[in-house]
Length: 385
Image (cartoon, rainbow, N blue to C red; front, side, top):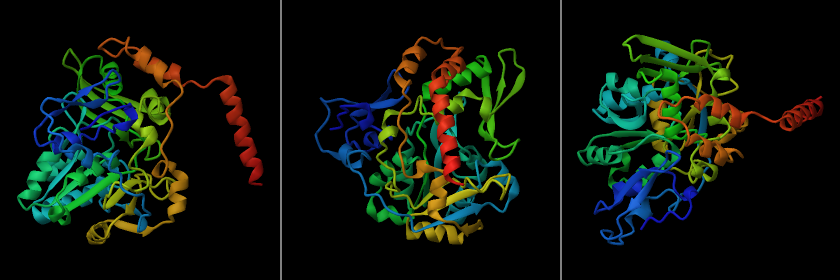
């Protein structure tokens, strides 16, 4: 039986609910907007299936990737529409067109919330492209993917490392050779409730039409948040905020409202079992203003998928990639103001008004911190001379 003694013991991957043979596990939001399992103890038969698929309780060992590559989609229009190099789109389209397979990934629903869904055409695949800085709701995605595998179809399942780990625990061994498991370099998953509040604040209660967390109008490294929405008076409006001015990014990067388990991630160190891990190849900003991806090869199946793809790829040094993105290996501690933030967040109205200001107040550095940071940078600079 799944028992959550502390919130950091649950990554919210939802695999336990799919594994339960009697359907006694459901998920509900807590006060921070994260989903946690609820077990109907009267129906539970004590089979332990939920524990076996839990990424926290059934951890895989950390591994070193087989190889590390920079990667770019040769179709520059797709590359520009993607978060970084556009490699995911190549992989996913190949699964769909080559074998009539199914691709699962995160997409925005009509309310601007993030959820997992299936794509079986290039048109459906477009919704799965791009970063979503909010934890996605798995819903029936695991069950649908398992059904597709039972029907003999190929499946590409993408998600955060904990989601991919949970899914692979569910996959019967006889079907593993038809799964291409793709996870991402994950900094952490922000609260869906905070995202809903910030989105409502941006739209003024209007209906979101398009959302892009990594709009590249100012370049890959200087992305911004773009939201197209229909106002309550029916007028369609565009909102764009560059990264340095968008408080939601700052709260996310500083781990003000990430899930508690992210500070003790159970799936770091390429322990999810993924065939491929995708991310941004920071440090190569001059290589392409439209973005360059990095791919870590975890398995022979992943290596084959890369080689058979049309992607432009080149070998890069693993240590150099990690230097620019330490989240590849390390969890990030929660912000010291996290508890205070959520205490104040609970007082916000349903329109989300005041969300941006609340984030700014809780991430604003004190004079002492600013001075300490200045001294640290000077010491580092002096030490390199």
